[in-house]
Length: 111
Image (cartoon, rainbow, N blue to C red):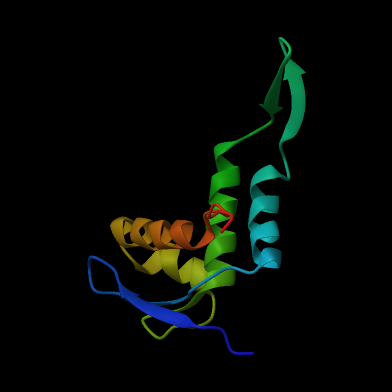
């Protein structure tokens, strides 16, 4: 089954093709990058995360690009490196914001 895609343009005119939703497996892979190095514990009777590093967020961003970006300016291979090495930081941040919207959890309301 071919997944629905959408095209967006970054502030500096890069054409980015994105998948319109993330599958459960993709969400689990992305969350794995964030929580894989984190240990949960109890501090002063409250749940606490230990071992979180800023590198975990970079891992999340890279995983989202790998899984959900189809192309950037018609480039389809090596998209993480392409995004990091060839576009302006504000365009990278724009792509990440779009991916965050795709991957954020939507609340399920009962009808």
